[in-house]
Image 1 (cartoon, rainbow, N blue to C red):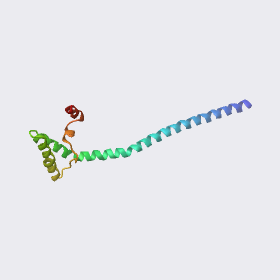
Image 2 (tube, helix red, strand yellow):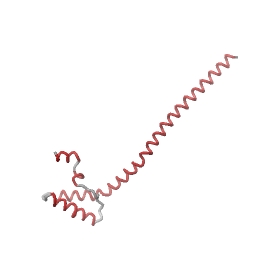
Image 3 (cartoon, rainbow, N blue to C red):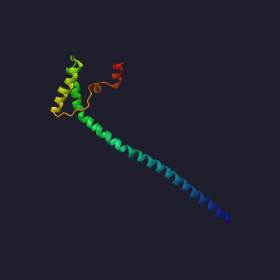
Image 4 (cartoon, helix red, strand yellow):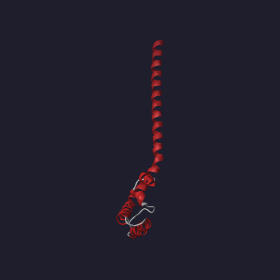
Length: 123
């Protein structure tokens, strides 16, 4: 009888230990899931901001491309001062008068050429 009770006690203790181990594994998984969710929540504001910036950039793309195309088409034979005047006053003014969205800080060089090439030009 004592041996049967000891066996039953050992069995119940083993079951309890298994349940505790399972509970600890579940808790670790929950902690990891909470960390991931919190990490993603922190990035939500940045993602929303990037999405809004992308939409705004997309809206101004037509005007930016039109200004760059006009610059490439018409400004080749002129000096830098006259090119700038044409691009800013004439082309930019025409786009604004027509209501075509255009970036305010639009740089034709940065739009058409990557920074590495500009650096090579500087050298």
